[in-house]
Length: 368
Image 1: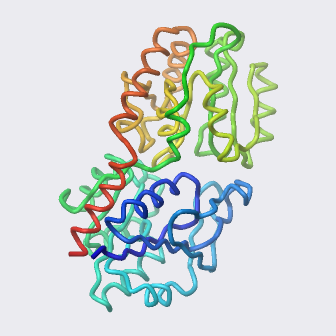
Image 2: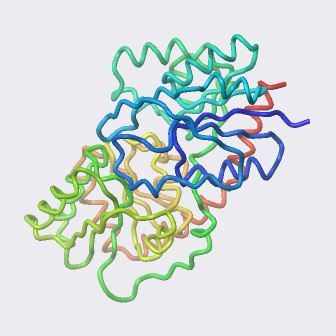
């Protein structure tokens, strides 16, 4: 008999869909996904970007959200306890340390069911948290029955909260990788090297500094910087690119179905965020066989963006290091080819099935 599990993510997003479908198809556990809201206030993605929820049982609650510019909102969902009563799961998996997780913990204690917490946070995340938030995390950590984290850095952070590593499973942030793994990469024979960014145009992404470094590197005639995304910084980024006189384009948001074409047209994928719990674009870029330029503060660093194997890792505050990395990636085709091959190897080490198995291990360990 399979264990019925209530999974409580914030909202339906495309990159989590493959994991939830895989869990349903494998039938080792019986997942029931309860989304806290249909979309997130304060995010700049068009509403149609949020996923259609196909291939696994799910429902969407309504509730109140407090928007946080550039960050995920705080969500208080209505009817969570009622939904859990109706499902009567053997285990609950909730996201991070917010109101829904505390409500789920109260429900689990009343019903004597285990609670797992899924977290993307890394040791770098703590600098962005208030003292009150850190106290909440320290209060909750020993009360959870186990954790699933999106990166190896997540294990390190939990160790700092006193959590035994035996209570933690690593399941990398999922993504729709199959269309990207099928891409056949060819080194561009003519035209500029295309350095691509895929993400929200918000301060955490550090794109102003990326533009400045691109200009300082003196590679504008050899390379083109393309920023795919939407957000409040779009007008300022366009103005900065025009002022610097560099070959750069703010191309607007990308629908999930169009991502394959974006990665197919890229030569280098960059993520230089000052705050980035994971950075799913790095997993997508690795699957697409791209050389990566990645911030050391991204949770993806070390797992799917491995320094020297498929990525150059940089301190996002170190402008000189960013300039040097851009020059190397643009002017050294043999480096790009080596890192691209490394991305295929890294992706082969981290199949989606391994992420599903990590979820199953964590759930079955506490549900039994």
